[in-house]
Length: 304
Image (tube, rainbow, N blue to C red):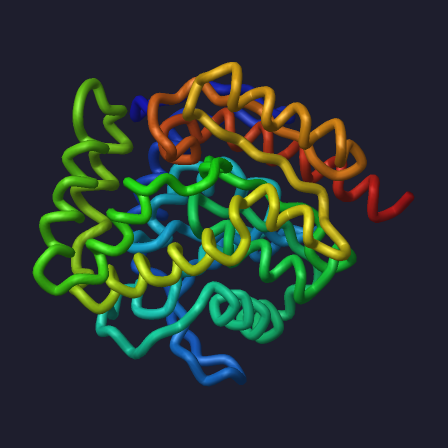
Protein backbone atom coordinates (compact mmCIF):
# COMPACT_ATOMS: atom_id res chain seq x y z
CA UNK A 1 0.00 0.00 0.00
CA UNK A 2 1.58 3.36 -0.96
CA UNK A 3 2.08 5.98 1.73
CA UNK A 4 -0.34 8.35 0.02
CA UNK A 5 -3.79 7.11 -0.89
CA UNK A 6 -6.46 9.27 -2.44
CA UNK A 7 -9.88 7.74 -2.00
CA UNK A 8 -13.36 9.18 -1.72
CA UNK A 9 -15.52 6.97 0.50
CA UNK A 10 -18.85 8.08 1.92
CA UNK A 11 -17.91 11.71 1.42
CA UNK A 12 -14.62 11.46 3.34
CA UNK A 13 -11.30 12.20 1.64
CA UNK A 14 -8.55 9.85 2.74
CA UNK A 15 -5.05 10.73 1.55
CA UNK A 16 -2.37 11.92 3.97
CA UNK A 17 -4.75 11.13 6.82
CA UNK A 18 -4.58 7.44 5.94
CA UNK A 19 -0.78 7.43 6.04
CA UNK A 20 -0.74 9.29 9.36
CA UNK A 21 -3.34 7.06 11.01
CA UNK A 22 -1.72 3.89 9.70
CA UNK A 23 1.64 4.94 11.12
CA UNK A 24 0.05 5.71 14.49
CA UNK A 25 -1.99 2.51 14.75
CA UNK A 26 0.96 0.40 13.62
CA UNK A 27 3.27 1.89 16.27
CA UNK A 28 0.79 2.05 19.14
CA UNK A 29 1.54 -0.82 21.53
CA UNK A 30 -2.03 -0.70 22.81
CA UNK A 31 -3.70 -1.14 26.16
CA UNK A 32 -3.58 -4.00 28.64
CA UNK A 33 -6.56 -4.94 30.76
CA UNK A 34 -7.51 -7.73 33.15
CA UNK A 35 -11.31 -8.12 32.97
CA UNK A 36 -13.30 -10.36 35.29
CA UNK A 37 -11.76 -13.51 33.84
CA UNK A 38 -8.42 -12.33 35.25
CA UNK A 39 -6.33 -12.91 32.12
CA UNK A 40 -4.11 -10.14 30.80
CA UNK A 41 -5.48 -8.97 27.44
CA UNK A 42 -3.63 -6.59 25.12
CA UNK A 43 -5.76 -4.56 22.72
CA UNK A 44 -6.21 -1.24 20.95
CA UNK A 45 -9.44 0.75 20.96
CA UNK A 46 -10.06 3.35 18.22
CA UNK A 47 -13.12 5.33 17.16
CA UNK A 48 -14.69 5.24 20.63
CA UNK A 49 -17.01 8.15 19.76
CA UNK A 50 -18.93 6.28 17.04
CA UNK A 51 -22.43 4.86 17.45
CA UNK A 52 -23.49 1.50 16.07
CA UNK A 53 -21.89 -1.92 16.48
CA UNK A 54 -18.21 -2.12 17.30
CA UNK A 55 -15.72 -4.03 15.19
CA UNK A 56 -13.65 -6.65 17.02
CA UNK A 57 -10.59 -8.09 15.27
CA UNK A 58 -8.77 -11.37 15.86
CA UNK A 59 -5.28 -11.90 14.46
CA UNK A 60 -3.88 -15.23 13.45
CA UNK A 61 -1.59 -17.08 15.85
CA UNK A 62 1.90 -15.66 16.55
CA UNK A 63 1.04 -12.17 15.33
CA UNK A 64 -0.51 -9.16 17.01
CA UNK A 65 -2.87 -6.22 16.57
CA UNK A 66 -0.49 -4.31 14.30
CA UNK A 67 -1.49 -6.44 11.33
CA UNK A 68 -4.83 -4.63 11.41
CA UNK A 69 -3.29 -1.14 11.40
CA UNK A 70 -3.91 -0.63 7.66
CA UNK A 71 -7.60 -1.49 7.53
CA UNK A 72 -8.22 0.06 10.97
CA UNK A 73 -7.14 3.42 9.56
CA UNK A 74 -10.17 3.24 7.26
CA UNK A 75 -12.68 1.57 9.57
CA UNK A 76 -12.20 3.77 12.62
CA UNK A 77 -13.56 6.75 10.72
CA UNK A 78 -17.00 5.13 10.89
CA UNK A 79 -16.95 2.53 13.68
CA UNK A 80 -15.30 1.74 16.97
CA UNK A 81 -12.51 -0.77 16.25
CA UNK A 82 -11.10 -3.02 18.98
CA UNK A 83 -8.03 -5.01 17.90
CA UNK A 84 -7.50 -7.81 20.41
CA UNK A 85 -4.43 -10.02 20.89
CA UNK A 86 -4.27 -13.62 22.02
CA UNK A 87 -2.87 -14.19 25.50
CA UNK A 88 0.92 -13.67 25.56
CA UNK A 89 0.72 -11.98 22.14
CA UNK A 90 0.74 -8.32 23.21
CA UNK A 91 3.72 -6.14 24.16
CA UNK A 92 4.45 -8.70 26.91
CA UNK A 93 5.32 -11.95 25.09
CA UNK A 94 5.93 -13.95 28.30
CA UNK A 95 4.21 -17.32 27.97
CA UNK A 96 1.58 -17.65 30.69
CA UNK A 97 0.30 -21.16 30.07
CA UNK A 98 -1.78 -23.09 27.57
CA UNK A 99 -5.09 -21.77 26.30
CA UNK A 100 -7.55 -22.76 23.59
CA UNK A 101 -9.53 -20.99 20.89
CA UNK A 102 -12.52 -21.28 23.21
CA UNK A 103 -10.51 -19.53 25.93
CA UNK A 104 -9.76 -16.68 23.53
CA UNK A 105 -13.47 -16.37 22.78
CA UNK A 106 -14.21 -16.18 26.51
CA UNK A 107 -11.47 -13.56 26.90
CA UNK A 108 -13.15 -11.56 24.15
CA UNK A 109 -16.49 -11.64 25.93
CA UNK A 110 -14.84 -10.44 29.15
CA UNK A 111 -13.08 -7.64 27.30
CA UNK A 112 -16.19 -6.51 25.42
CA UNK A 113 -18.23 -6.55 28.63
CA UNK A 114 -15.61 -4.47 30.43
CA UNK A 115 -15.61 -1.93 27.57
CA UNK A 116 -19.39 -1.68 27.49
CA UNK A 117 -19.75 -3.18 24.00
CA UNK A 118 -23.12 -4.76 23.32
CA UNK A 119 -23.28 -5.61 19.60
CA UNK A 120 -20.29 -6.13 17.35
CA UNK A 121 -18.93 -7.48 14.09
CA UNK A 122 -15.86 -9.72 14.17
CA UNK A 123 -13.02 -9.68 11.63
CA UNK A 124 -10.92 -12.83 11.99
CA UNK A 125 -7.66 -13.51 10.17
CA UNK A 126 -6.60 -17.04 9.31
CA UNK A 127 -6.75 -19.40 12.31
CA UNK A 128 -8.14 -16.62 14.47
CA UNK A 129 -11.38 -17.67 12.80
CA UNK A 130 -11.51 -20.82 14.95
CA UNK A 131 -11.83 -18.53 17.98
CA UNK A 132 -14.32 -16.30 16.16
CA UNK A 133 -16.58 -19.26 15.40
CA UNK A 134 -16.45 -20.30 19.05
CA UNK A 135 -17.37 -16.73 19.98
CA UNK A 136 -20.32 -16.82 17.57
CA UNK A 137 -21.51 -20.02 19.24
CA UNK A 138 -21.25 -18.47 22.70
CA UNK A 139 -22.99 -15.13 22.14
CA UNK A 140 -25.39 -15.78 19.23
CA UNK A 141 -26.30 -13.60 16.26
CA UNK A 142 -28.14 -10.96 18.27
CA UNK A 143 -24.85 -9.83 19.80
CA UNK A 144 -22.32 -10.88 17.14
CA UNK A 145 -24.06 -9.54 14.06
CA UNK A 146 -21.54 -10.65 11.47
CA UNK A 147 -18.26 -12.46 10.97
CA UNK A 148 -15.83 -11.42 8.22
CA UNK A 149 -13.33 -14.23 7.74
CA UNK A 150 -10.02 -13.10 6.26
CA UNK A 151 -8.59 -16.00 4.28
CA UNK A 152 -8.96 -19.10 6.41
CA UNK A 153 -8.05 -22.12 4.29
CA UNK A 154 -11.28 -24.09 3.96
CA UNK A 155 -9.89 -27.43 2.79
CA UNK A 156 -9.15 -30.58 4.76
CA UNK A 157 -5.71 -30.45 6.35
CA UNK A 158 -3.14 -32.37 4.30
CA UNK A 159 -0.61 -34.82 5.78
CA UNK A 160 2.07 -32.23 5.00
CA UNK A 161 0.18 -29.58 6.97
CA UNK A 162 -0.28 -31.91 9.92
CA UNK A 163 3.43 -32.69 9.72
CA UNK A 164 4.27 -28.99 9.97
CA UNK A 165 1.93 -28.58 12.95
CA UNK A 166 3.65 -31.52 14.67
CA UNK A 167 7.06 -30.03 13.90
CA UNK A 168 6.05 -26.80 15.64
CA UNK A 169 5.49 -28.86 18.78
CA UNK A 170 9.00 -30.33 18.81
CA UNK A 171 11.76 -28.57 20.73
CA UNK A 172 14.29 -29.64 18.12
CA UNK A 173 12.17 -28.75 15.08
CA UNK A 174 10.03 -25.69 15.88
CA UNK A 175 12.65 -23.08 14.97
CA UNK A 176 13.48 -24.67 11.62
CA UNK A 177 9.77 -24.94 10.83
CA UNK A 178 9.00 -21.31 11.63
CA UNK A 179 11.91 -20.12 9.49
CA UNK A 180 10.59 -22.22 6.60
CA UNK A 181 7.17 -20.59 7.00
CA UNK A 182 8.67 -17.09 6.94
CA UNK A 183 10.83 -17.80 3.90
CA UNK A 184 7.85 -19.15 1.98
CA UNK A 185 5.78 -16.07 2.87
CA UNK A 186 8.60 -13.67 1.94
CA UNK A 187 9.50 -15.39 -1.32
CA UNK A 188 8.87 -13.77 -4.70
CA UNK A 189 7.28 -10.37 -5.18
CA UNK A 190 5.81 -9.63 -1.77
CA UNK A 191 3.64 -6.61 -1.01
CA UNK A 192 5.63 -4.03 1.00
CA UNK A 193 3.11 -4.03 3.85
CA UNK A 194 3.26 -7.83 4.08
CA UNK A 195 7.04 -7.75 4.20
CA UNK A 196 6.99 -5.05 6.89
CA UNK A 197 4.57 -6.99 9.09
CA UNK A 198 6.44 -10.28 8.76
CA UNK A 199 9.77 -8.68 9.55
CA UNK A 200 8.62 -6.41 12.39
CA UNK A 201 5.66 -7.87 14.29
CA UNK A 202 6.01 -11.67 14.45
CA UNK A 203 9.12 -11.71 16.61
CA UNK A 204 9.33 -12.34 20.32
CA UNK A 205 7.53 -15.69 20.43
CA UNK A 206 9.40 -18.64 21.86
CA UNK A 207 8.99 -22.39 21.68
CA UNK A 208 6.02 -22.56 24.07
CA UNK A 209 3.85 -20.21 22.01
CA UNK A 210 4.73 -21.79 18.67
CA UNK A 211 4.17 -25.27 20.07
CA UNK A 212 0.78 -24.25 21.43
CA UNK A 213 -0.19 -22.86 18.04
CA UNK A 214 0.64 -26.18 16.39
CA UNK A 215 -1.24 -28.19 19.02
CA UNK A 216 -4.33 -25.96 19.00
CA UNK A 217 -4.66 -25.65 15.22
CA UNK A 218 -4.12 -29.40 14.85
CA UNK A 219 -6.88 -30.08 17.38
CA UNK A 220 -9.27 -27.73 15.56
CA UNK A 221 -8.88 -29.48 12.21
CA UNK A 222 -9.13 -32.93 13.79
CA UNK A 223 -12.29 -31.89 15.67
CA UNK A 224 -14.13 -30.05 12.89
CA UNK A 225 -12.53 -31.16 9.62
CA UNK A 226 -12.69 -27.75 7.93
CA UNK A 227 -13.76 -24.21 8.84
CA UNK A 228 -16.84 -24.56 6.61
CA UNK A 229 -17.91 -27.69 8.48
CA UNK A 230 -17.48 -25.79 11.74
CA UNK A 231 -19.69 -22.98 10.41
CA UNK A 232 -22.39 -25.51 9.56
CA UNK A 233 -22.54 -26.57 13.20
CA UNK A 234 -23.36 -23.07 14.48
CA UNK A 235 -26.84 -23.09 16.00
CA UNK A 236 -27.45 -19.37 15.49
CA UNK A 237 -25.00 -18.16 12.83
CA UNK A 238 -24.36 -14.48 12.20
CA UNK A 239 -23.90 -13.18 8.69
CA UNK A 240 -20.63 -14.73 7.49
CA UNK A 241 -18.52 -13.32 4.66
CA UNK A 242 -15.28 -15.04 3.61
CA UNK A 243 -12.69 -12.81 1.91
CA UNK A 244 -9.97 -15.05 0.52
CA UNK A 245 -7.07 -14.60 -1.89
CA UNK A 246 -5.66 -18.11 -2.20
CA UNK A 247 -5.94 -20.62 -3.73
CA UNK A 248 -7.14 -19.15 -7.02
CA UNK A 249 -8.67 -22.34 -8.39
CA UNK A 250 -12.06 -23.16 -9.83
CA UNK A 251 -12.36 -26.07 -7.42
CA UNK A 252 -11.93 -23.79 -4.40
CA UNK A 253 -14.42 -21.27 -5.75
CA UNK A 254 -16.92 -24.07 -6.43
CA UNK A 255 -16.53 -25.27 -2.84
CA UNK A 256 -17.58 -21.84 -1.62
CA UNK A 257 -20.36 -21.51 -4.16
CA UNK A 258 -21.94 -24.80 -3.10
CA UNK A 259 -21.71 -23.75 0.54
CA UNK A 260 -23.30 -20.39 -0.33
CA UNK A 261 -26.20 -22.08 -2.13
CA UNK A 262 -26.84 -24.30 0.89
CA UNK A 263 -26.62 -21.42 3.39
CA UNK A 264 -27.64 -18.44 1.26
CA UNK A 265 -29.48 -16.78 4.14
CA UNK A 266 -26.23 -16.09 6.00
CA UNK A 267 -23.10 -17.00 3.97
CA UNK A 268 -21.34 -15.06 1.20
CA UNK A 269 -17.78 -14.96 -0.13
CA UNK A 270 -15.51 -12.98 -2.42
CA UNK A 271 -12.06 -13.56 -3.87
CA UNK A 272 -9.52 -10.78 -3.32
CA UNK A 273 -6.77 -9.96 -5.78
CA UNK A 274 -3.86 -10.62 -3.44
CA UNK A 275 -1.05 -13.13 -3.60
CA UNK A 276 -0.95 -13.99 0.12
CA UNK A 277 -3.29 -15.15 2.87
CA UNK A 278 -3.35 -11.66 4.43
CA UNK A 279 -5.91 -9.55 2.50
CA UNK A 280 -6.34 -7.06 5.36
CA UNK A 281 -2.63 -6.22 5.06
CA UNK A 282 -2.17 -6.61 1.32
CA UNK A 283 -5.35 -4.83 0.20
CA UNK A 284 -6.90 -3.01 3.19
CA UNK A 285 -9.06 -0.76 1.00
CA UNK A 286 -10.79 -3.80 -0.49
CA UNK A 287 -11.34 -5.40 2.94
CA UNK A 288 -12.63 -2.07 4.25
CA UNK A 289 -15.26 -1.79 1.52
CA UNK A 290 -16.31 -5.43 1.95
CA UNK A 291 -16.62 -4.94 5.71
CA UNK A 292 -18.80 -1.85 5.35
CA UNK A 293 -21.12 -3.72 3.01
CA UNK A 294 -21.41 -6.61 5.47
CA UNK A 295 -22.10 -4.24 8.36
CA UNK A 296 -24.87 -2.55 6.37
CA UNK A 297 -26.49 -5.93 5.70
CA UNK A 298 -26.07 -7.01 9.31
CA UNK A 299 -27.76 -3.89 10.65
CA UNK A 300 -30.67 -4.31 8.22
CA UNK A 301 -30.98 -7.96 9.23
CA UNK A 302 -31.01 -6.99 12.90
CA UNK A 303 -33.78 -4.43 12.46
CA UNK A 304 -35.91 -6.45 10.02
